[in-house]
Image 1 (cartoon, rainbow, N blue to C red):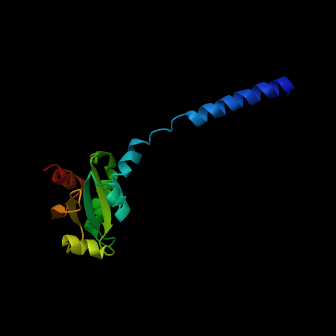
Image 2: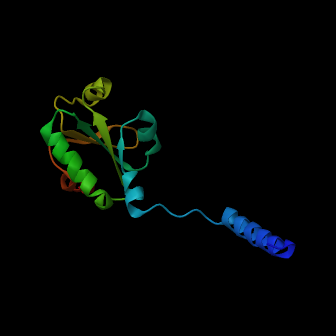
Image 3: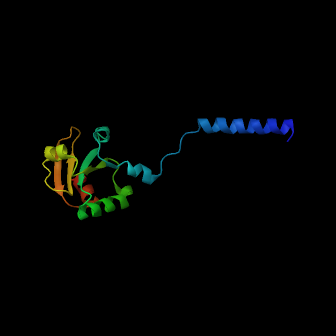
Length: 136
């Protein structure tokens, strides 16, 4: 490689690198954006979703109905409305939340308002139920 070829190659690489650093990042794929609408419950994530319709899904790993609902939601992530966030809430660990919302069985759901007050509570269902309860 001659000095001139090396100089031209270096200039091309620098130009490409400069263009790459100013490029806007790619938007996440639809599934990635939908994934942020079905999250494990944490207080920080729940608080960050204020302004959206927040649904707590009290899930237990040993519950067959919970597993079916979880699989249904995961299989239809793109169908979760953009203004809804579903929080998969550990039934066995989130004792304070169960007490706060009067939850006595797993596979229960709570739709909350922006202050965390329960608007609706129900037991059972899949994603279609969640969507209908957030639209009523």
